[in-house]
Length: 435
Image (cartoon, rainbow, N blue to C red):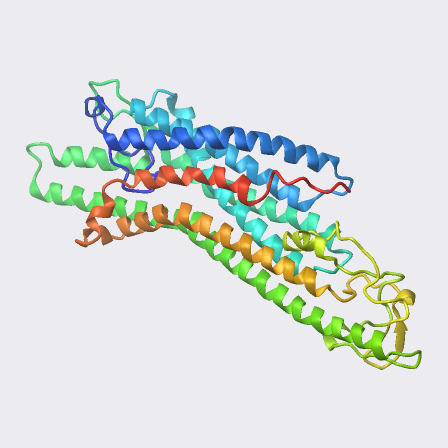
């Protein structure tokens, strides 16, 4: 059995041979099954428990939490991978043939791809949401908009995963390659055609011209298959990977900008307390100007204990108190004195001076979490996708790369470790704050 192509696309069950070639399991197959069983044993209870706890916390919140909504969807994607893809792979390795009929063949081919797409897209949605959360760190209206935004992002992720997985239903089918055998395989359309053409080309009595024609037709089918598989990898791994890395780098840059503004505002407030009088007027930096239509009776400081909430993009739980004293006065760009406690409400106005300690804590938390997320995603997903891409482009013919292309199924099985690390990285067991 060879799986030197993309298993959860058209190459998933492509080897077409008689069942006699799989009378016993090879060492590679035994190790692959062991990896799948290990991932199932850990990820199945972990994700079921975390889904139950996260969903219960989501229902307990008076205001719907976008972070919990994202976690629920990530749990669902992981559960699909563990309960649909992993058992199917283990059964296929053990039996080698397909005994579930054509309908089940198409359904499993769809969900084997859909679960991986959904998992990758939800992780990308979480990264994008945290960019918005960091940007709107001090906006009172951000929480209401964030839930709607998360629903929109998730809807797009589910829809895109569905659309990209539909071709699997059309491509995969039940095929009986040997007329005198009951052996059947769930394989792709072009693998079926390739087998038929190669069988004809190997028959005696076929002219050289016909043999060359059949060979060229097979090469065309192989190129089509490679284009489809490369497109699949682009949407499954490479594009989401760029989104995830770019998003978390953006979060760190935004928090660094807030940190600088917070230091500037803290300096202004400190000078006001030390040297201010009723006649003193302070002009904050341009980025912190308040206009006539700013908030009414709002005095907010983001305190150090809220650092984790900032890094996670949630501003609904932030504790509030006066950033400076009520007597601290800010001036508008027109140098008109405006007291914080008497400002009119404006929906999109940002407020107050962010605590330098809080922003620093949020930045450090974001750095740690971004590092773990990016490392886990790259370590789990990239080895298989990189080697598969090299395999399809012919790089495996290079002498120094040949030892690494013995069996790519090991790397694909290792991708199923993703449902284990996701609940740990994204903190599904953290106790959420009730609203």
